[in-house]
Amino acid sequence: MADIDAMIEQLDVILKAAVDAFAAAGDREALQQLRVRYLGKKGALTEVLKGVGKLSPEDRPVIGQHVNRTKAALAESLEQREIELAEKAKTARIEAEKADITLPGRKKTGGALHPVQLGLDEITAVFAQMGFVVAEGPEIEDEFHNFDALNIPPEHPARAMHDTFFLKDLQTNDEQPMLLRTHTSPVQIRAMKRFLAEGGEPPLAVVAPGRVYRCDYDVTHSPMFHQVEVFKVDRKVSMAHLKGVLKHFLSTYFEKDVAIRLRPHYFPFTEPSAEVDIGCVFCAGKGCRICKGSGWIEVLGSGMIHPNVLKSVGIDAQEFSGFAFGLGVERLVMLKQGIPDLRLFFENDVRFLRRMGASR
Ligand code: PHE
Image 1 (cartoon, rainbow, N blue to C red):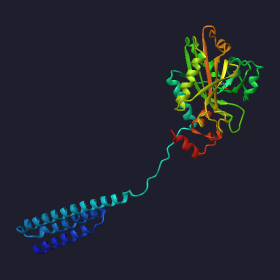
Image 2 (image 1 turned 120 degrees about the vertical axis):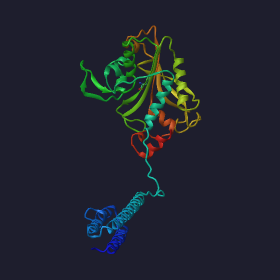
Image 3 (image 1 turned 180 degrees about the vertical axis):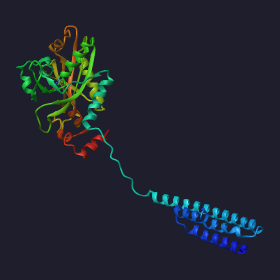
């Protein structure tokens, strides 16, 4: 007969050893192995149970109770340790992922629109608010739209004055050489033709922003620059309308009441034509270096659309008249922002671009 007391003692030893081992287990895998060792099918408790058959029938239930109690104690201790380990792992993870909120942040540099683009948008918006419709035309033009239709016939000296980039390899079907448009005035022709083709009848009021090209480069000239063309065709349009629109636009753009002056000039596509000066925005007309002491600064070319131009698109010049003007965007932005050199726009110095881009 086996000794029940020895068996009970053995159970206590197992329990104690197991509890110590659980406490020493450093992670869940180690704990899992201990579960097998103590509670598994071939574990220490099973080993003890094998001896039960050798006990007397009265002792068997007694040892059964002990085994169950030990089993329960083991299971509880194991579970306790599992919770502890899970807690420990969580704390370790939080520790590892902790961010040092005292570190300085990483600054993102935001993009900004180019000052010329800002100017284009701003200028176009003033006219759009007055009801002018925005139109665009191609930068690669033919001679018809850039010159002929604008009353500049082939032998006209104005053609030579335009410093045109011709695209010798590109020709239209009727052998006209293509070119980079020298001004936005061809959009007058294209917009009027499109409008009429769609069955429109004047009034027609258009603002056409875009890139233009001239073979020229110095402090005040760049081979590529931007213009905004503005025109209106209707019955009884006069110079008074032209001047009113100009005055409103320039005062809105410069955010102050600017004086304007129309000086007689010549453009083939307008008659009469006028160059438009504004009272110098730097010296308020007193005379300074920028306005060369005159108190006036030239800002754009304008006039009443020449009857030949209206005729070239099929508008009756007896019934309708129109005004037109074209302004240089870079020039206006330079005057408004006090930028001394045109080339700054195209050198892509980020310090300049950042300052001007953010200045709005
Ligand atoms: N197209 C002219 C230029 O580029 C400007 C202009 C436009 C003048 C419309 C009169 C009317 O210089």
